[in-house]
Image (cartoon, rainbow, N blue to C red):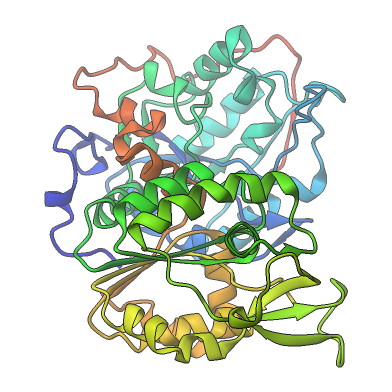
Length: 458
């Protein structure tokens, strides 16, 4: 899926894996393998996209130590960290071992019931020795968010970053989807020579095609919460030629524009959407989907309890039940069809219906977009991609290697970068632009955390 001219679309200051000395080095690599829920891999796409970087490290003589975050084990209110088995890296390791026919070691480190893993102790040194001597294929650290220092910053964060640096000679960041400046994505770069992996490079290059698009540029945005999308939505609005909305975002817009009430849309969302309505009165960029699906219940697509509504029938002051999908007929509307068929760049960060029961709108959207055979089509977000795969599996498989399609691994990162106007404002990317070479620690033996010896997986 790498596009032509990728190098031309990246800042030349970006330090890339191609220029790293990996031979004989222990390489700490941060991935975004956040694909596990309740102990199962829901979709291995993000893992599969990192095989190129992993292969390159090994092929050039490097010995890899992998890490990723999974879920949100930290309670934002109390700060406590719960190391739940369902958010373990074990399923990822099993998948990698099955795919790559090698063995990975997962360190078993002591867990504090309230603070998670305090740090990395010296029990890992034996595994590092086995890694160097090629008795194992790699080491996969526990969920980075299980570690006290990953998100907490301060002294704990600094200590954790030093401990990570003590494991390796080089750091590779291939986790574009992990844009927050945490210890394993940002602080670590203060201590090791640091480079962008191949997936990171591809994401940046293709994101530039969204930020500086070939026009006409059409964006499709939906979301379950209006307030979380306001800033990137406004940033996108300023960039696009046409904007199509879905989900709760669209419902809030309809309430604000037509003076109606829709079940489940809070007053705060309607108030916030009024600014977008006013903005669009002058610019007229929003292309409305004229037919929506109203349901009496959130419990499912129950016969006799849902119906199609036309926006032409909306009357100020009226109230409606839950609007949970877009009727496929909307994409046959002349204005909507012409908008999509005439686009040169299409960016989609949207699930149009309330899943898993209301999916017709998303299927119709993906099919309509595919009929435009000349546009660059870019999909961002795990939910967006998963819906595409579930509803249009044949289409998905047929376009995986199609240069007219690109599927981002991190939807939130894409929206954040669009809001900032550049991928290089993201802290973990920004730190890879620094020109000075960082010195590696004198030893690749772990920095002891003083919490006793741990047990190992193998």
